[in-house]
Image 1 (cartoon, rainbow, N blue to C red):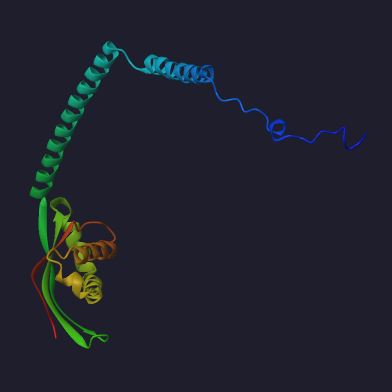
Image 2: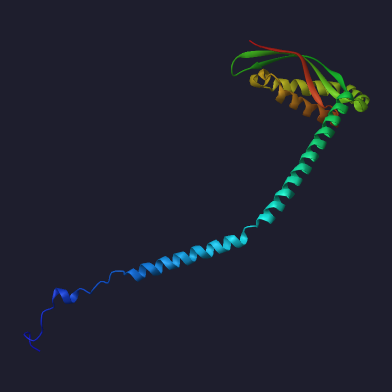
Length: 194
């Protein structure tokens, strides 16, 4: 073949014709989306309860709430009765008067702490507590002193002395061997930092 017989390619022949989406393609896409939405609506409507079912569920929940409220009020009354019963059956016992002096080497200051310590025990356990207290008096005093010496100024500045009370309560009951002491009470508590 000669060069004259082969025709040079033209720009129009090389570019394939691009077909633009027609109206029917748009209608098909809209139909598919519509069918999907309708299927979802049918599925949701099958899962939703009817008005009668909703009303019966609401009645059940309302009655359960009333029963729960009644149970809570009965529980609160029983708890109040137990607390009042316990408060009438509680005795205060003196755990001693204390004067503690500690020196903080980091700050170069010393703390002078003075207080009287009382505790509460159940009336029926008072004699047992007194016997154990007398048998372990020195060990209890030592545990209380160690606890107070180990306290920070922030713990001693707490108006309720909550952490100190809990620590003393724990160590005292552990030393007694039984949880006889219910509460630790400070009287005439003062501390001075010098």
